[in-house]
Length: 238
Image (cartoon, rainbow, N blue to C red; front, side, top):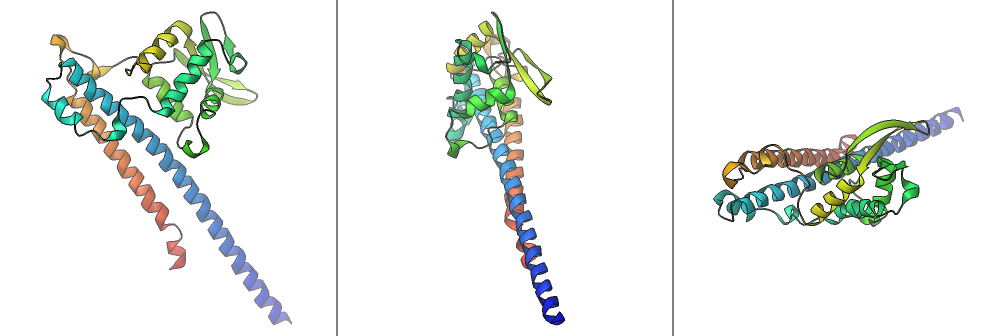
């Protein structure tokens, strides 16, 4: 009888150990997939930035810059400068707020500006996206989109309901102008080597190379994580 109970205990212990290992593997794969989704969203933004940079160079040269002409033809479809549905969802929510809607979602509302927590803004943006397309749209992504179109006046951190939250500040007049410019296909501001230089020329070469290197680095990270995900569980089976 004692021998039978010992064998039963061993069997149960092995079963529980297997379940624990499998659970850890599932959690690890989910963590990796989430990280990949975030990197893919970052890569998408980088590709759109690349398209904007090259297109600006082409426009500034009057369509005569050989560098811009060559690289415009090489841009993948995902680098289209047309606003995608994710960026547009942010713009649509901010337009509604700026027009006087969703006041109950605001942290503060005055005649000249409004403030909203990053979480509240992201919640409203996600309502416009179907569940199947919510991939990588997190607070970090939201911050990148707001920065890309120059939509905020600033931000600060504040403890709300015992939690530390980011609060974005929006000037109503400047937000309206930024939204109009973003919907027309241009960014609200350009910095550094993206500026049009004297003589009406736009030197995009250095910026394009840096952006390509950024995209390449993201590709390597994504590939590495995908390999890591496929290898999970294989060692335990050996």
